[in-house]
Image (tube, rainbow, N blue to C red):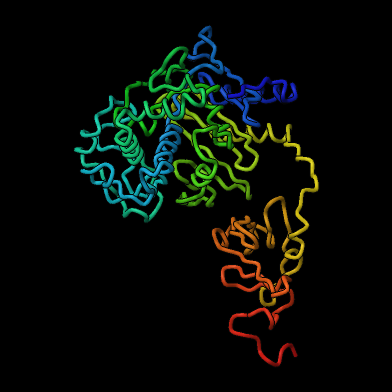
Length: 456
């Protein structure tokens, strides 16, 4: 992790963010709150307000104070699963039963478990697992945990589903799930302060009374088989490295294409009375706000809240922690990132001429039937129309005069430049559609032919 100095942002911006954090701590009555901003793979700002025990005179929280990250743990488990997929040891369409037999969850696929689309019950059948000592995998299975809905029917957030994925990871490697994460993710990324139990300076888990300024300590236990759903503790410094990972700085831990696949929306978060802005990918939460994509995850455990949010395009991210059981920290976290971006906008890269003149004969105006569109080169991509509008899309070259769609309707679909015998361009063949230089060019092999009388 490159921990950048705060000099990388304007000192006034740093002071403004620290002021906002102090306001959040006071207004939400948080015993302590810690936050950080990531840009360019580095932590450019961090601060903490309050004390680890919520008392005046207590030890002050800082960037190395541990907090529970709760369900952000799931993103680590999901990456471990995808590493198994990339190694050829499983397929996302595999039934859970093929890897962990003997449960009532066996009909669900690994992909459905990752995206909370397996219909698995949200919580355990026993006492509230987040506040009681954990049980073994066998005890969890024998408690008859199962599905509430048909697999694939709908989004249903499931902590039990991630306990199952943690068991899958453990069995695949022959060691505890956390040991897999430590060896394959945490150590390579330099996240030495991320652990399953508090270590070193750690915040106390506290509940704040809703009507009085008094505190109640929350219990903390080893979650046992439920650990993969929310066991981990971490620090601002460590989680900033994970935010940089989500922003694309994956090192040798995960292929960039795999990370992008994990960010694709799989299940829509459909909540009564709310607009559809959230979804789940493979282990990651995805937000689409006014066309801007964010990825990350939230976390909560008794006595703790955590959040991580990263702009998928720019890589700018924010992380936050608080040692309280409940508070609207999520919005405060988003507001910090918005305030940072407003004061420190990303400077666009300088444009330079790097195009290939050999492709000019493919660019310009095209017609699909009577609809008019244009083809242009943007970097290495052929762009047809306006991506995100109607059927506009980018295409990546796969060979001479051959491309594949990257967006929307044409994602994964082939585009082929068809040339005449003399080498000039006749038309474009896009997933069986014909794009011609003039509307319904009768010489361009239009499917169904063109009326002999032509345009009249």
